[in-house]
Image (cartoon, rainbow, N blue to C red):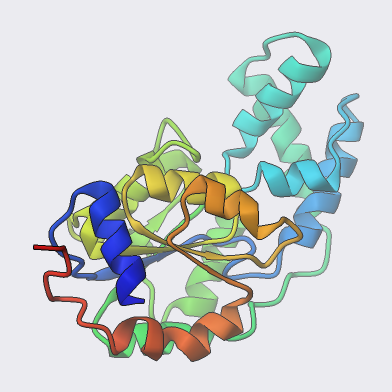
Length: 250
């Protein structure tokens, strides 16, 4: 891990890596929700004459829903739609998603949060969703480690992922932190791109069906296969490393 941290510092021109917070993405990281999202996206968009495959859902994961819809409509129908029309379409996708069984918490996530909290780091969530029921569930499931003031939603920023704004807002909510004080845990290409653009140390947990090369190309600092693996490896990856030391080359 020390080598990866050195590479991160050199890439961004930072002098030290001193984490104070961990920012989690939500879908596909905290919850095994992407299969449901993929079905809801496909069925909802079909009602509006838009073809959206499961692969499209995974590829655009993390982006604000209205932005995804406007892009898909422009690509397939050649027209620009208003924010209001996109919101109407997104509302249908949301309705279908919430009609499905609730996705389970990713195995290993609660243990990971416990380890992070015990080490003294703050915990935040940065999601492209703006659905109130999901935010309420976050507080029910993770309220022991998370408070509402440390959650960033689609409505907290004007530009969603892959722009850096959501993670920069997450740093701000965590106490005005700097990128070298922040670890991001993501699973989506656009989310990884956003975290890297925000210059945070980016851990990709590839819980979907996309090849690792996509996340390497997006600039992820570490790639791990599942949340339970990240949880079991956390002490080795971070707690036993000289994180507060200057790891840059002389």
